[in-house]
Image (cartoon, rainbow, N blue to C red):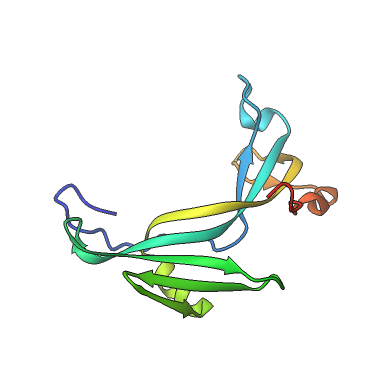
Length: 137
């Protein structure tokens, strides 16, 4: 987020809110493409944005997602002693300026594989195994 001279790099970054998929293979000497993998699925839980022009000046603001009992998410913005609820379009407007992002594990796909160019290949029967049970979370 910052250049060597301490000024802020304002370039936007792509940060998925849901369904970030990361391939995982048990430690071995084989390349990832040579065997079955699990694909771990993550959803964004919180992030921080720096408001200011340099690393030595400015203010950090935290955003976090809190699910309710019915499974709906509410996003909050915390800035010093102020907490306010955010609409999803407001979150999407600031997420590209995130400084730190935190994800939570949401599920997995066992038995997937990677193509030669690194794309995840999933089978249809694996899709049913994506959600974690409450005990796994």
